[in-house]
Length: 345
Image (cartoon, rainbow, N blue to C red):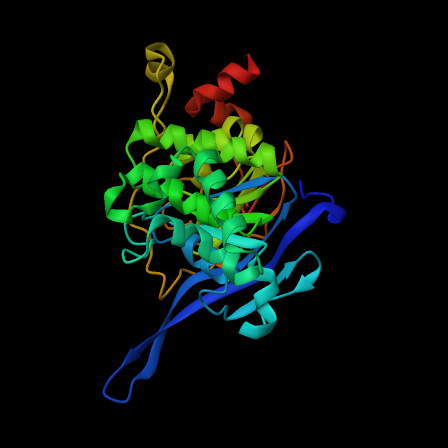
């Protein structure tokens, strides 16, 4: 399930991110939001790891902690064998070139006062001592590579469409020649037709430059298309981790099965045969997560042990890593996930 240690770029170990809630005039900490708890995964060279889950489950907080946009509460982040989570800004600088990001909103992630050429060239100027002519040539080549015209380099962000702005953000991320790009909901703000174009562009760039991606999203169809492995988060915890094929055809965690049962199916016959697993209740508050398995308050398979003991993320039948005392069996999966029926039959 885990990649070969020799090929690992990013190694996240028990990452925890808690946000303090301050109260009163003195701003005393009254509670904490448990955004991420004991999150662990690895990403290898040339691999895409999808990170999925409901809104508020901790996906973006995990991504921001990896990028050092927020400070983790505890845990470790290793980049190519070297721990980086505790580095000062000055010592972190050499690693930022190799670790770039594409953000969710192309409308707010670009400086509206800078021309497109300056936005893309800024990382090159920050990390290299290249001349103006060389930088101009590289920026023009990046524009063409992401599907923009070089004559658009003089424009400002407001003169681009949403899809073009996201392409501009991708060009900026590519400029310093990174090895891993954290994509935080990179297509959720775009039209469906444009989403497909951007996803295909990211996959082509991965093949061309040997990039690795941490792809954060809530759209299961998009994640399935681009990811080699997928991690499912619920209320700050990773509850299942598997290859894309195995996760989408034979999920083991009941929460993952419920997510898969909600995916629309184009074939009317399969859609009619599929049983939707509707979850009851609301997601518990991240300021006061329930004891035991955090999903037990909504799980139809929960028993007393689920309420008292937090299940570890261990390997189940089929190779999936799942945090569940009573994982789904193949008959349960086949009843609700038509793609599993096709794989098995």
